[in-house]
Length: 153
Image 1 (cartoon, helix red, strand yellow):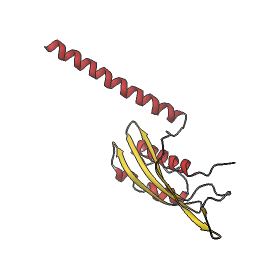
Image 2 (cartoon, helix red, strand yellow):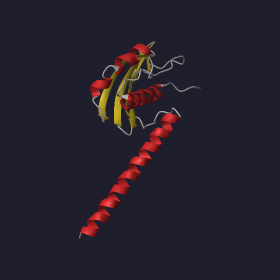
Image 3 (cartoon, one colour):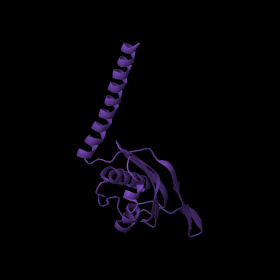
Image 4 (cartoon, helix red, strand yellow):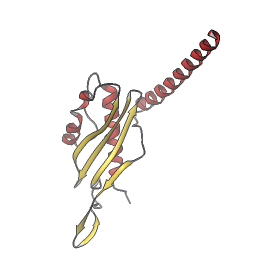
């Protein structure tokens, strides 16, 4: 019985190590290449408005973004963050962390939504001691902004 238990412990430990290594390799490679992790859109809501008496999209050909609230996700080996980014008239008017499942405290990144609105960009100042949370937050905001972009052409 003891031999069987030791074999299972070794097998499980090896499996956990393999999963951890795969996650590290994936996030480390993306970090080296400075590529955000891409995710499938969740809960994307867009708005429309009446223009000259006809109902139409608030998208104008010269706007970079569509009006609406867009949900983005960012993750790495320390967890995940979901955000909701609201855009109106090509401006980021609200950013909310809708789900925080990181290894560290959400209080470390609580000021980042305001920084996004001030800079009008997903690129925020790294929070010392919360590098992974900052990176996941940036990826989530960029994911939402990518979904909000007007199609070219």
